[in-house]
Every structure is written in C-alpha cells, then in structure tokens.
Length: 479
Image 1 (spheres, rainbow, N blue to C red):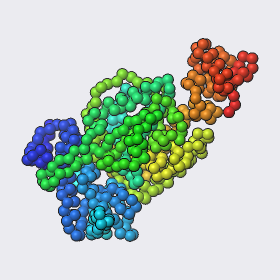
Image 2: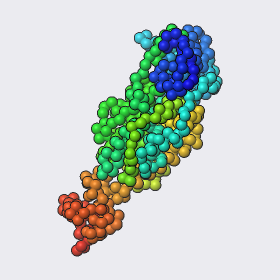
Image 3: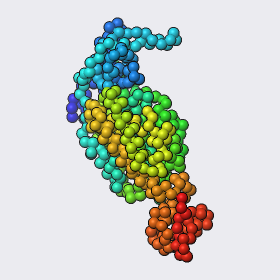
Image 4: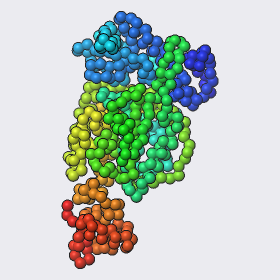
C-alpha cells in the first residue's frame, strides 16, 4: 500500500491509502490529477490574461506554420494556438518546449480568437515523472497471444500495436487500423482471435466515457484525458458509415485515437480496390495452421496498466525526420512492388491498397514506428526506428502476398474468381503442377472420391477451367 495526495476532486484535500493497482484505475477514470498537471493548467489560464507570454507546454502540430501548445499530453480542455515567425525552426511534434511571444487576434467578426505569435522556442524536459508498467512489452505481447499458436511474430506485433495506437499526425487522425482475413475453412477463426485479444484487456477501457471534474484549486471544471483511445470493430463486407468516416479520418471526437478492426469471414477481400483494404493500415492474413488453445476469461490488471502507461507516453518527432521518413517508406514500398508481378503492380497508386499519398501506407508505417516507441517508453522517434518498422511492414506484406499469390496460382486465377475452397484447391494444384490423373488430384487436395468427382466435373463442364489433357489426365486451361 502507498499513500498519495489527491487534490480536491473529491472535496477537501485528503490523504488516501490506495494500492498501486487501485491508483492506476483511478488515474484511468479521472480521479487523480498530478501536481504537474495542475500547475500547467493554472499557468495556461494565467498566460491568456497577459500581453507578453512565457509558457511551457507540449507541441501538437496543426500544419506547417501553426501548432497547438498543450499544458499536458493528457488533457485537451486547455490549449494555445501558436504561430512561428519566418525563419524560426518548427518544433518537433509532442515535444515539451518553452516559448515566448505576443498575442494577436485572428478570425472573423463572428468568431475571433487569439493566436500566440512566438518569437523564441527552446526544447525542454517536463518536471513530470513518467508512468511505467509492471510488465515488459514482451510479456504484454506474450499474454495477448498465450492461447494461440503459429501466428507470425511480426503479425503478433502489429496486433499488439493496435491496442497501443499512435498520437495524431498532420492531416491524419491517430490510431491504427487492421484488416484481418483467414482461410474460408475456418470462418470463425478471426473473430475468435479478436475476441480473445479484447478479453485480455479490462472491459472498462473499451468505450470509456470522458468525464469532467471540478478542480477546486483552479476554480473551474476540466476534462482529463488520461487514456484517449477507443476502438471500432466492423465487418469488412459491410462497413458502417461511422467506420467509413473514421477510416477517412474525417471526424475528430475529442481528438481520440481511434483504432479500427475490420474482420472478414473470407480469406481476402472481394476486390483489392475495396474501401476497407485501401484505408487499412495493416492487412493481416491468419493462415490455416494457426490454432486456438483453451481460452481464459481473466483480464489481468497489469495488461490494462501497460496500455495506460503506453498512452501517457507520446514520443516526439522532428519535422525533418518526419519528411525524410515518408520519403524512405515510399521508396521501400515501390521497391517491394518491383519484386512482385501480377498482384502488387495493380495495387500501387492513388486510392489503391498501396497508396503512397499522405493518408496511405507511408503514414501507416510512421504510425507503427510511433506506436512501437510508445510501447518501449521512448521519448523520441528516430529514423532508424522508422527504417526498422518499414522492414517489418514489408515482411508482413510478403506474408499477405504469398498467401494471396498462392490462392491465384501466381496470377493464373483471377483474384475475384467465384470458386469455393475445394474448387480453388484443385485449380491451383493443376496450374502449379501440370496435368494429373484423377486419383493424384484427390490425394493432393485431400478430397474424397465422390467430392473430387463433383469438383472436377464442375470445373470441366460448368466453368471451363480445366480440360482433358489425355485419356486419363486433367489440366488447367491456360490463363
């Protein structure tokens, strides 16, 4: 047990005995402000009443010329819009700075607001002790997947980052989107995986409502955002309008980070240009050899604590590193496309799966790097981290394209061909291995005699996809 001072959210200041676990829960639900936060909020209130301002806070980019200055990384009730003078270096996103400047008025007659014109910026470090977790990142990821086998380590990491997410970036809302697909013989596998991962997290974190409290020391009400993240789960085949808006990063509800999970009963989308796949950060294929063991209904509070600690850490990134990194990721995706043939070349371009636009895959990789730095409690996102995240992203694409390429027999079967799983297996086998007799086809595709006869008759007589190569051998019709 530890003793902590709680400012007057619960009335008069009092000493309260509370366990470390209990303190994390109270922090999550807004019952505890730190002295650092109270001081910062108070200083922001004072700054708005004076002409010459000298203030400390955290940077949140708006565009290339303006940024928000926030008192803490965990609150959005108080902020200052800042504008730099010509020739001044732009501060890194999420960086704690001190700045000096004067107020000017902007806007229209109907809506006038103040902007702080900054003439001096100094990088600084806050007098603020970081929250940390009782478990390591490897333990967190291990606990998430303890009831699953044969999921690729890179894909495990991506699914882990879904819960960590990333702070907002210029022109794009924070959050990570995954599209999960799996082979059709295990139509419930993806949904079981998603539900098991969610079960590892305290249910209070899913859809938590933001709360506003009175701070008696400051004599006003204030919204605390210790954990500004929510998630959206949607069917890939039937994406709701709300999910579409989130995928487009169009709406900004309290500046929440919104991770989205698109679940599919099919092992790939109906169309590679489909909206959900284009807007998804990470397409992930859950292969047939993945298995689910017994599952537990127990949610370890340390897992919840880990997520809260990660979300209270927003590593900074310099504008130069941001620009260089986007260029690096674009080049890496182009290079990957050059190693592929029929699939990848169709997917590169505006409003395609491998879009290189600002809202496309290069920013997805940057989001991944930021999330990975949060999970490791790092202060800065450097280019080496982004290069590493790019390699991991490309490896995941390799997994996805290997599965999809196998399904299309290297492009010989159209990706949208209307075949069931057994028909697909027979046709892929013949495309890859050439003419074979009936018995060998059944053995290779694990089909019974009767089932094999029905499939081959259908592909031969109805689909015209195979033909009699000789008296007793079948072959695939060349594409």
